[in-house]
Length: 385
Image 1 (cartoon, rainbow, N blue to C red):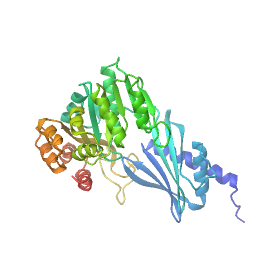
Image 2 (image 1 turned 90 degrees about the vertical axis):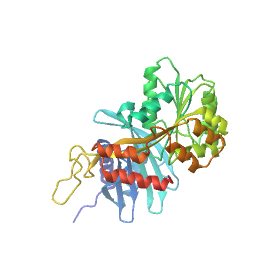
Image 3 (image 1 turned 180 degrees about the vertical axis):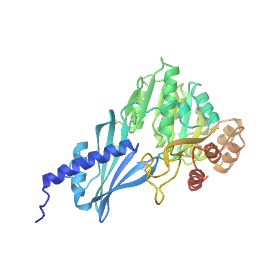
Image 4 (image 1 turned 30 degrees about the horizontal axis):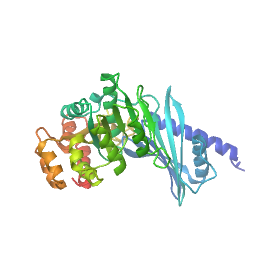
C-alpha cells in the first residue's frame, strides 16, 4: 500500500520548492515571480525582460501550503485569505542580498501571489550604459546641470523610467558631491549612498503630498519624486522647480505630448509649466538578442538555451524621444493648444527623433530584432500617438 505523505513532509517539500523557485528566478534575472491558481494547478511564471514565462505547474492541492509559506516569509497573516496583503523579506543568493516584496490577493480559485525581486546593492547603472542615443543623453544631462527646473520621464510601467532617473541622479551626485539629494518614492526600489531616501505610502499618513511639503523645508537641492500621480503632487513638483530646486520625476503617459497635456489638465497653470519644465523624455525598453544563442529561439531538435530560457532574448536596452521647450512650444502651451498641434511642433524640432526611429537604431546595430521594434510601434499606436 502506498504511504500517504504527511502534512509535515508536504510542508517541508513546499519550503524547498519555494526556495528553489526564488533562487531560480534570481539567477534568471527575473523581476517578478507569479503564483497563479488555475482550476488544475498553480501556474508559476517569471517576468523576464518584461515578458511572463511559464516555468512550473504545482498541483493545486498544494496551493494553501504555497501561499502560507510565502506569507510566513513576509510576516503576513496566514489565516486571512479574504484580503490583499503586502510584506517583504530579504534573501541571499550566490553571495548577493535581494529584497523580496510579496503581495497576496484573493481570487475565486484561491489566493494569487506576486513576488517582486529587487537587488539590495545599488542597482544604479551609468547613464551611458542604458542604450539611450547620444542626442537624448546629451539633452537629459544639459537639462539636469541647469540646477533647477523639472525633468520628466514618461512611459508605461516597466519602461525603465526609474532606472534612468537613478542613473541621472547618481551622475549628478558624483558631479555635485556637496549638494543635498533627496528622493520620495513608493516604494524605494534601490538604495543609494549619499542620498536621503524617503518611502511613502498612498494608504498611510506619510503620503507624497505630505512628504514633499515638509521636505521643501529640509533644504534639498536635487529632489527625485518617484512618480507624479495626482494634481497635488504635480503642483508641489512645479512649485519646487520654480523655487530653485532641480526636480526629477516620472509620469505614466504614453508619449511626450500627452505628458504635457495631462500636467495642464491636473491644474498646472500654463505660465508655470512653461517656466518650470526643462525636458520631457518618453522611454521604452527593447529586448536584446541573446549573446549565447544569437537569438536562435527554441526549435524542434535544438536544446533550449539556458541563458535566455529559449526566448532568444536576454537583457534590455532603452530607446527614447526627448523634447525641449523651445519658443514655439512654450507659446503653444500658453495658448492651451491641443495635443495635435503640440505634436506637430515637436516633430519640427531640430534633431528630434521619434521612438520608432530610435528603436530602429538598435535594429540596425544588430542589438535587437525588427519584431521587437515593430511591437514597440504597436504599443505606441495603442497609446494614442
